[in-house]
Length: 289
Ligand code: GLU
Image (cartoon, rainbow, N blue to C red; front, side, top):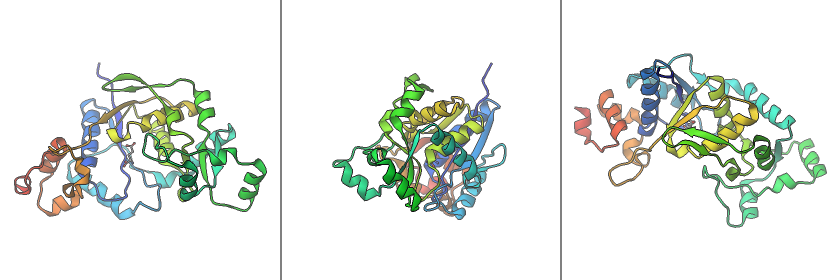
C-alpha cells in the first residue's frame, strides 16, 4: 500500500515567486497528488522587515497560473503569533531560553574570526548566556531590546542523540549542537523561521517535508525542536537546487528573477514548469512558443 504523503510548500513572501520556488512546489505537489495525500500552502511571513503583502498575493496568483492547487486554507504565519509565543513560553518554562541583548556588531567583535552555523548564520559566542543574573534582570526591567536564544547544550542533553529520515540516505545522525545557541525570537521579529516552520509542520501533520537542499542542514535543528516539544517526526526529501549547465545556481541568474517576468514575456505555464524541472536554459523564444 502506498503511504499518503502530506506535504507543503512554504515560501516567504520577500520577493516574487522564482524558478527555485516552482521546482520545490512542483516536487511537493506531484508527490502529494501521486499518493492521494495532501498538498498544503503556507506563507512564512513572520519577518516584518522583509515580507510584503503584495508578494504574497502574486505568489498565490503565479502558483494558480502554473496549474497548482492546494488543500485546506492557506496558513499565514503572521496570523498565528500567539501560537508561536506559547511554544517560546513552554521552552522558557523549562529553562531552555535566555535573552540576548547583543547587536550584530557585539557578536562580530566577540567572535574574533566568526564561525558559521550550518545554515550560514554566525555562530553565537555565548556572551549573554553567561550574563550576570542581576544585570540580565536590570536590562529586562528597563525594556532593553533582546532576542531569545536556545540553550543548546541543555536542549541537546534533554533531547539525547537524534536521527532523522532523509529520503535518499535513510536514517542519518543529527548534529543540532552545530547551530549553537540559535535565535528563536528575534529583536525585530517575534519568532524565528526555525520555530514557526517546525511548529506548523507538526500542527499540519506533515509526513514528508519537501524543499531545496539548501535547507537540509536546518532539518537537524528542527528535529531537536520536534523532540523537545514532543511533536511527531516527519521524513525529509531535500531536492537538488536548480543549476544551469555551468553549475551556477539558477536562483542567482536573471532568468530566475520572477515568474511574473516570464509571464509578461509570453511564457506558457507548461514551458515554465519544464524550465523548473530541468533548469535548462531554454531560449526565451522556444519557451514562449
Ligand atoms: N520559507 C522558507 C523559504 O522560503 C522555506 C521553508 C521550508 O520549506 O521549510 O526559504
